[in-house]
Length: 333
Ligand code: KG4
Ligand code: ZN
Image (cartoon, rainbow, N blue to C red; front, side, top):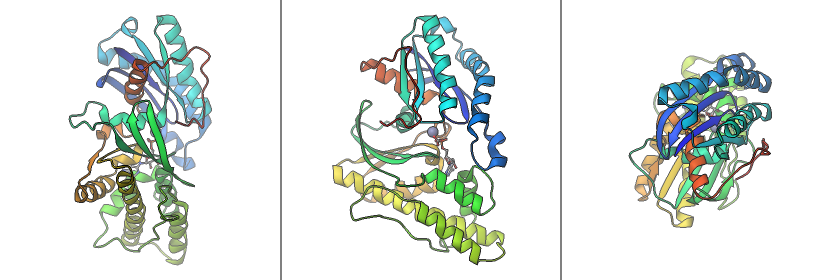
């Protein structure tokens, strides 16, 4: 089923053509560099960028897939969570296309799409049920996934998301925005063990929730007390922060597997591109007889292919949206 996916929840403007799990095209442009000097995404700038680029991105997605608009059989679009103004651009475009083409419309939850991006163009395929971990700039959550439309929340962050913690620590260290890739790079250049050692926040016994604000504050106080920051000290702080944050994420993910008797873990979201997370989870999972799956690197960040894939799977299970569909900045699963 030829599906046109549209994603505009934050700074990426993306349109993709997918057919089940096959990606025919996945075009992405981003306003990221326009936000860098503000240290975070400015909603109005993101919305204006979507308005300016959405038609170009749509045209290039069709061209790359060698398809015409008339070939499209289903329109899938992110309806939340995300920035309201940004979401509205994608949803308005999707409604117009659905109406003009007479193609059905399905609204997709962005977090669910991250969770299932592992299925895109991928050789190793997990089988349901599995534990899903979404680690992005806006979310850090664990799910028990029985099917595309059968997802139960097991735990989530009580304050900052993991990607947000990376971004805030990078800001404290003057490393720019976004923080994830640069912290990963600095941490990988650190010598020896991850030092200084920052606190691991496990919350109450047995909790599958997360908290990253304490470690961020610990980095802030450590940095204030350290005086001039040499490059090697910055590397050490990045490595110490990353090690502490990822230890908790990996431990809780594997605890969720054990608690629910599941032997597979699927990870998605922007932070799933992080190699230290991949290595830590692969290693710890292997020791417990659990298989871990990550999306292809090109599908870790926001993209429309994941929206098309989930839209089609939900459509096959009966999901339909109409032209009155709204957007929801806080959309829950
Ligand atoms: O999923 P995403 O593209 O957007 C949201 O839905 O939030 O995630 C963006 C987040 C940012 O916080 C960014 O710093 C983080 O993902 N990120 C990383 C890496 N690449 C992106 N965090 C750690 N390591 C990375 N390599
Ligand atoms: Zn995202």
